Length: 462
Image (cartoon, rainbow, N blue to C red; front, side, top):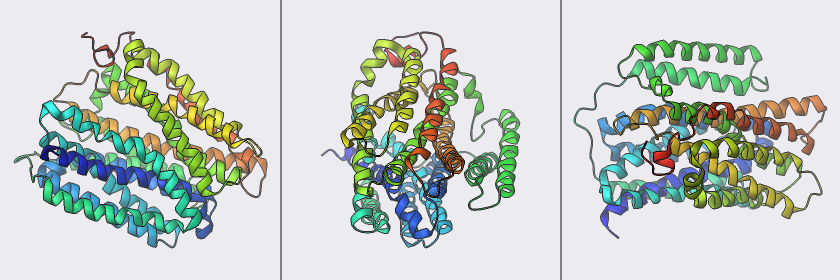
């Protein structure tokens, strides 16, 4: 194989490790909750902590790669991720697990953008499309392999074993990166907006964690509300600061661009529902329908298969109908698909559940692909990096907020129905609420002109 494709393969393997890990833990949540002596819903904080670590560190990854070299940062990211995995395996309390997941998120945050930088620098432009196709492998197979492997290990071995999978992959990845990735960096990356980073990152983290803790199961509601209040205040202070700063760490001026605004703001509402499903669905199957972790994994992987079908037709669909039409109608279909999970009940045939989950993976995947493509429709090449930073942070925080919203609705539903343990009827309100979040994105998308983003969607020049 050509040496220029070794770097993309190494990056793809690292991203596959991260993708599998992100999908492997959700199947094990009920077993982990039993060992820690907590309600399974309470473990949503472990998922949120990972998303917070992932989201808040993305904005500084490009600067770190320029300052210390992409290879050094990439190897460090893998090392941090593996260390976080070992900490997860050794955790004997929910607090330690939450901290370990945050550490994993920090490592994961650096792997994705820095991996792309490595590919851009290592591969000629004529081969860039082929090289970037390697990065589609983790996104395609991670959600399929993760639930299956996680369910099997949890059912037949022990949930702690799932975190040891990352160790040999990570060590080998560090070795390959050291041997085959060039040590390049920018001679003068310029100053980093440290104050803006601390203000925005701390504000987003406090707000999201405060919302996660607001049910009062792990701390008092007063503490959770204080975290939310401080987080909101810090984010509110960041807005005027970013407007005055020449090059803020998160440039809010991009939100004035209609296609970018619709993709980031409207897309964040859709991603709340998208982020909730990987958390809710395994819980509903195991706690609500009494399936084993492995049986649950066999069901949930159907969603990834549906997503693969959708991705194979996404280009044709967008060329035929354009961004605006696809995003409006598909948001409704995606919302209905998510809400349809609420019809599951004891005695329902497994084939029927599997089919609903398969179909339910098609529409969200198309929406996700469309939003990720439209975000660059009217962004110049020079602004792509800064626009990506803001979009990536909002995307990750929206996915984390989805887990938080799902946990809150599930907690309220469980309390309102007066059940001592989780039963299937506790889950349908949560699926309906997160499904409605997808519908909430439609009014924002409707403001777009009919031909918005056609140069990207249909290859037409404006």
